[in-house]
Length: 384
Image (tube, rainbow, N blue to C red):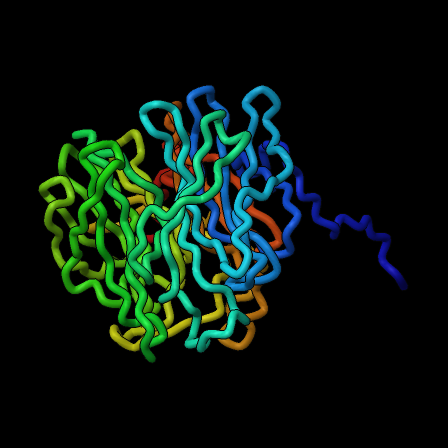
C-alpha cells in the first residue's frame, strides 16, 4: 500500500537570513543566470554586505558577466541580482571586491576572450585574460564603465586586494600561458602597492608552478600566509612571507586535501586561521595535472598554528551524501567558497550552490566548528 507522506522535497531558496537546526544562518542569493560561480564578499561601512559573482549560460561563454547583490542590514534579506559588466565577446570571471580609503569600491576581475571568437580554443582560454575593474562611488548601487587595471595577458585573480597592517595593498594573482599543460604551468605572483593602488610592482612566488588562487592572511605585522589551490588535485599548499610580501618561501603541502578547486581563507578574531574548502583530494602524485569533476561538500577547517595542522573541522554544506567510489560523481557540486570576517567577528562564507544554481551565503562563529565545551561529553572510560 502507499505510505501517507508529507512532501517537502521542493527546496525553498530563501533570500532571507534563516537560522537552521544546526545553528547556521544562511540565505540563497536571488539570481537570474542559470549558472552562478566564484562569489566574493565585502562588508560596507554601514553594515550592509555586497556579494559579486559571475553568471550566465556557462563559464567561458560570451554571456558570462558580473552580477551584484546587497544584503541589507535593515531587512536581513539579499536584493535581486543586477548585472554590472557587459563585455561583449569576452567572459568576465572571478570578481574581487575592495573598498578604498575614500569609500570608493573596486570590483576587479579577469576578462578573457570568450569561446567562439575565432581564435584557437586551447583548453580554457585563460591565457587571453586581462585584469579589468569597475568602480562604484555610491556603495555598489551604480558602477562605472570598465578600465584595464593590469594589461599583462594571462592575468587571473581570485582573492580580492588585501590591506596589510602597514597600509600596503597586496593582490595575489596567477599567470596563465598558452601551452599544452592544462594550466599546470601557471605561476603565482603578488602585486604590491604602497600608494593606495595608484601603482603596483610584481613579486614572484618561487616554485609555484601549478599552484594558484593564493589566499593571503596576515597573522601578525608583516607575517603573511598564502594558501594555494593545486592544479594537481593533491593538497592545499602554503607559502610564508616574513617581510610584508617582499619575499616568499616556496609553497609546501598542508594536511588539507585539494581537488583542484578554489578555497577561502580568513583570520579569525582568536588568531586562528579558517580554511573553507572541499575536503577531498584525488592525486597522490604532485606534478600530474588533474581536473576531477567532484566538488561534493564544503568544510570549514581551523588551524591554531598558522596552517601546520587543522585539528578542528566541520562540514558546512553536506551536499547529497553520495560517498562511494562508484557514485561520488552523483553529487551536485558545492564549490569555490570565499571567506570574510565581519566587524563583529562573525565568519561569512559564500559559495556556488547545487551545481551553480545560485550563490549561498552562510554565517557562523568559530565555536560552531571547534565545539563548545558543553557540547563535548566527558570520557566515560569505555573507549580505553
